Figure 1 (spheres, helix red, strand yellow):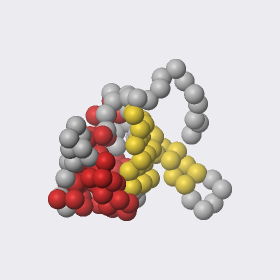
Figure 2 (cartoon, rainbow, N blue to C red):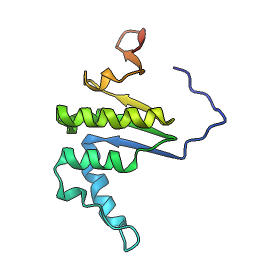
Figure 3 (cartoon, one colour):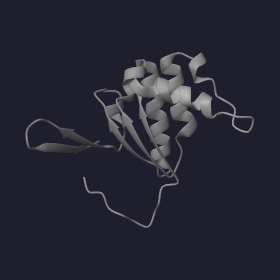
Length: 126
């Protein structure tokens, strides 16, 4: 993988980690006001609120880093997230996802990098 600076700048970015989502949902309440009401993430299950925040903030022309998003999601909801990621990627968004989920690893047209404790890594394109 090569990171380079180009002419296109992302308009939005987000780092989302299932294990620290509770803190994100709590801060969302703290930062809410009349112009920006809370979306009530704490009123939903962990998986449903995690998926909701991903859907609320993902869009075209963004850069998103997800750390094991499957930890919060059922297989059905992983498919929902997969569809949303795919649609955003088709519109120009970029994603870096650390995952063990075979569902998320099945992303069409994805470049998959495998890292291991050895010095080598592998790269696949699906």
